[in-house]
Image (cartoon, rainbow, N blue to C red; front, side):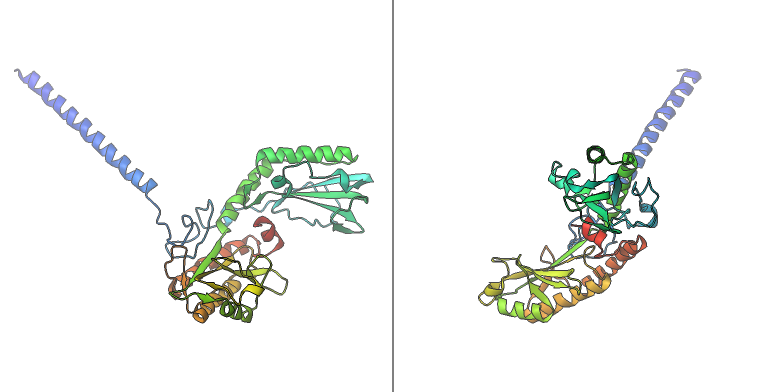
Length: 360
């Protein structure tokens, strides 16, 4: 074999080795990136879904639907999609609806509008429940009464609730329904920006999914069942009252629920059955967005579950029956402070009318 042939053979071998090496390097690089991208996120044993607002600290059955990051100012822009007062520029008239969570429209009619002409009866029940109507009468917005002629009606469509963001199809139905209603009563209405409303609804849904947290704990009997009389005595001493649906509720001075206590067995709690009732497990629940008072209300919830557990001789556990000690509950409190800070930064007050409507 000549020197030329040997040289060419050597070059060929080097090229083959180089290609194989490059391919191996690419394979390792791709695998490393895949592992980083798709590495399993540690799921909190006490959470229904992957943690969105928290690090690796434990929580009590915290539901964060679709959440991926801690809410920040950059994640959410309050919206003000409204055609209310667009024709008159009547700044003295204050809307009864929230521009942050509703798509608002105003129907004006010089001869007056009968509320019967703006009915949601023909709409899907789930969609119709998102719509509110108010009539302008004697310098106030009030629920409209059929038979009264209002100079203007205001209509608000809730852009997001626990079912999710309103769809583009429903927004189109809403716009068409409003247009038809306005024409039917001889009224005027400005066109709605459907695309902007949909974009705002998606952003709202992202933020609200991150603060939609419902905390629930179980107090379980280690051996003998809890007597109903003991449960009732502790609950009533803490200000809880049993209601028609079988839950004891602690409410604030305005009647809003702070937290609730229920029987995990049968039957539900009832005043006339507590004397004979015995149960092995009770549940206490706290809805973060709907409960007014923020972290102070959570502290009252915490004090109650600890007092109830001590009073009946039970253990505080999560959904998996893992014991929740003081350290775990301290961790939850720290996580909730972050959530409340995010809510306050948006002006979205726990237990407010907006919170109750969105998280109904």
